[in-house]
Length: 241
Image (cartoon, rainbow, N blue to C red; front, top):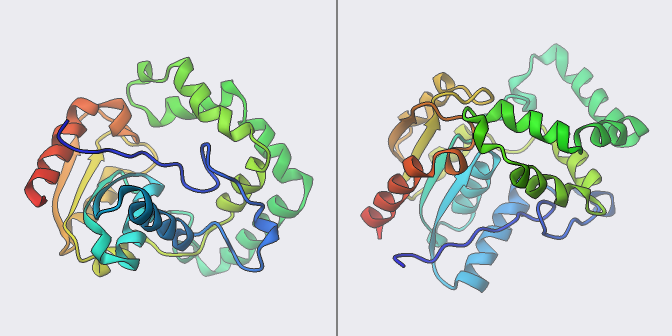
């Protein structure tokens, strides 16, 4: 085995604890919280610096952690990082009050829980995955259950609503100029949620060594096409170890 690999569930997700966001005076489910979790995990479990391999919204977490504690991160691989197109700063000024009103409606009325119940079903999860995976044969019943089951835990609905209403915090373009470690960006050519045409802009940041397009791959390339992703990760880690 060439490297130790850890896969962690961010607090609020997967099989990690799901504290009730209403019990905190300030926002709890933020990239600062998750960045601190990642750095603490490296200090207490990994017990060394590490490379962060991040997909989608996890890319923001990896960047945030690297900015908060640069000595912990040896390098970052960003796979189809979330562009955060629903961020408040990416909305027209005249639409922002309506967005806040809709978020309050989801958080504070039964509508939010009804929406969650509609998407927290095997059929809905499979449909969503078939949107983001270009190769839909990778969307197996096992994968659907792996994603759905933690979402049925107590407290999951409150975390879900809190996150979809989180339209503040940093954007990738805010964090990339602050990162001190090398970054590799890879992007699924067929990603329907984060279009590769928009993603190419991140290749121009000083910290980014390369921007790699992954042919015929959707939003989750590490799962859909590990034969493309793993060699990229291995060569990046070897180069900077």
